[in-house]
Length: 233
Ligand SMILES: Nc1ncnc2c1ncn2[C@@H]1O[C@H](COP(=O)(O)OP(=O)(O)OP(=O)(O)O)[C@@H](O)[C@H]1O
Image: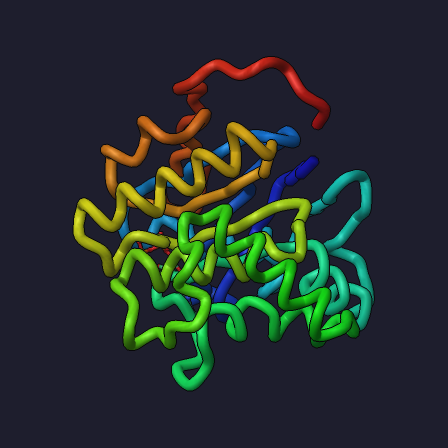
């Protein structure tokens, strides 16, 4: 599904350039749940932002399902971002004045779907993340873990090819983190959702299939931690 070849991302130029990514190559198959790990400053967020089309690489090649996204014109990248890629950020990025259902269906309405269809899709997505019956609550009336699950519902409502999560449990206690990780695992196991998640917590490894570790912008290990049947790249 994803092929990355010799990806580089430098911040600044010349002698003082920060080589946040310095030639990273790997492939991710459809249906994999992959963790990106590494010490602070190793390049995890930089890599995820490029994979999620939120940033451009300085050099290298990036393809999703055979489509060379690193070369797409901005309008097409923007369409791809809106319709095919799901995001979950550490701060949830929910709109405080909106209910859970509204937060989920606002994106679907931006795609031009009817309010009724968007609302029904939102309720279905909220049910999948275990929030049935909480569709009318605003973020202030939810726990941190529930807020993050609303953000996950928003991401899956558009049935994305790939879901990207950047430290989704960074602001959560262990109990809430487990609920969020259980939702990711359920989406991956039962719906085949491809997930790429940045995390620095070693105990999160038990939830994922594979761990890619970065050190100073270089891939230093790529380890299968949970066997799955072979799938298409
Ligand atoms: N916008 C920027 N301008 C300059 N340097 C940057 C910028 N963003 C990141 N960097 C540098 O690039 C390197 C990689 O940063 P990145 O945020 O990708 O690391 P990380 O592994 O996600 O770290 P953390 O776990 O602390 O979030 C670091 O040295 C960082 O200081």
